[in-house]
Image 1 (cartoon, helix red, strand yellow):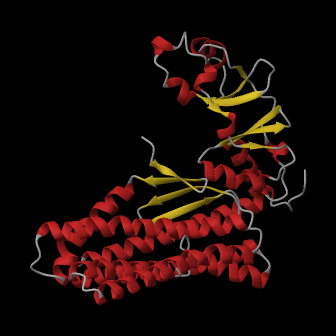
Image 2 (image 1 turned 120 degrees about the vertical axis):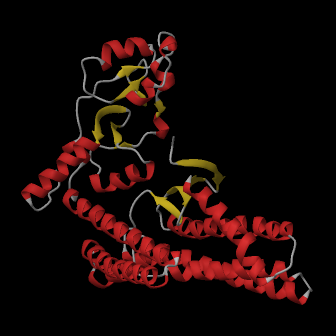
Image 3 (image 1 turned 90 degrees about the horizontal axis):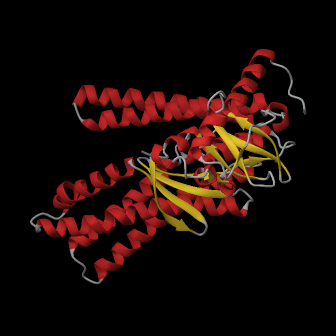
Length: 380
């Protein structure tokens, strides 16, 4: 099962949600209806608590989405394409096709998310004041007050100087602008993230051991999550440094074994899969132009009884959904597109001609060679 499901599309951006979000939605709604609202407005019927909770909870997640759209729209304005926003347990992630080109651009993209959250919190607070003046029920005011507080807390929490929070990117942007060195800025910001995560873990465990409350464990878990994210961020930038200056053509696999789109799956297995070690095959039309990519996982999903009639072209992922690169393109420019797509392969095209394929194996070998040689990167 996929780890995310599709919600819809807005302003050309695909919106998905991780399955963990469903757990978060249920926990927030239950906490509001069973604890938070009854504590603030006692002696109300249960259905009233649930009615407000079920209205406020989706409004909060709409706020999370607005936070991510803030990042995405500013990124687009700065020339960084955004195709997907994914909501999950800790909020949301805007998947940018590439890194920002400067510290100033990264600062603009990073800071807008918390600004949107704080602005939404202020708007919800103003709405609560207005509703109070009009004599709205206390339960409704409590729901609006909770929504206001959560948005402000979300904005402030995201400003903590730690990856993957926006504050970590704000810190890196500031260091990047000061030193004009993206790699060094990332290393310094990651070090701050690790220190902060250690403090969170220590305080969380101390609170749990001294009071026995689950809040301490939750704080320690957040610290652990920040620690892992900061390490991952530093590793990504270190890999980009090893691949700096290397062109796609230098590390791609070529020539590539292709499969005609009209070949039945059964014949494809016999002629191509058996005896070959590849796990993905570009699919071409009658003129030899690439029209898609098929993997062994997709072939496996075709029922054996249908493999004699189903053409491999109908199983393949269409070319417009496949990550493609040019031979002269720097590998570091390709990496963000691969990460954003969740894939591990890119077809290398010279115009309409397929000249190679870049796989995870190719990338790993290039990284290993770079780590062994420690040579200064050169254009190849």
